[in-house]
Each structure stands twice: as structure tokens, then as C-alpha cells.
Image (cartoon, rainbow, N blue to C red):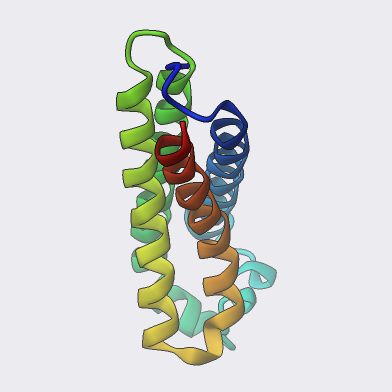
Length: 139
């Protein structure tokens, strides 16, 4: 880590980057791998197999957006552990987290009833951004 960063905040921020990545990997599995199961598509508020079949291509695509965001966060974590590219890792992590956070804002503004899903999707990224910015600002 760079001497100009607050190590405690970097560690806490990294934990939230990791959690955000895991959450988005889980969402990927739901949307792109497990979508055919009624227990999965019912979690997303769909009531019939016909609705699930109609939404399936969009859910599949959306799941891959989530896995790509998780991969970006993971790559940022790996880069943050490097002595030579750790600032790039923080930038990549913040970009991935900001994308996750903004997606949660889009979710809740498109359907306020999905506030719980938006909170699940957006809280870890928000906290990760907060702690990584604090690490840079207080180092």
C-alpha cells in the first residue's frame, strides 16, 4: 500500500469491495444460471412460468452485467494488493462499486417496491466507496 493512504480504511474498504463482488456474483447465478427454478424467478416478483420465460433473456443478460461488475471489483482488489498498480486498483474498484451503486439507484427509482433488493445491491458498494475515498483523503 502507498504510504499516503490510511491502511485501516483501505482494509475496511477492501472488505466491502469483496462483499459487493460476492453479492453481484450471487445475483449473476440467480439471473443467468438458476433462472429456470420457480423459487428463483419468484424472488424477482414474477408470478407465472410465462412471465419468467418472457423475462428470461433480459435476466440472463442482466446477470452477466453483474458478473462483469464483480470481476471488475475483484481485479481492483488484486491490483490494490500490488505495490506497483495499487492506485489503479483503487480506481478500478471505485468504478465497479460506483456502477453497482448507480444500478441500485436505478432499481429503486424504477420500482420503489424493490427497495430491499436495491439496498442489498447498493449498500456494500456505497460503504466500499466511502472507505476507499477516506483511505485516500486521510492518508
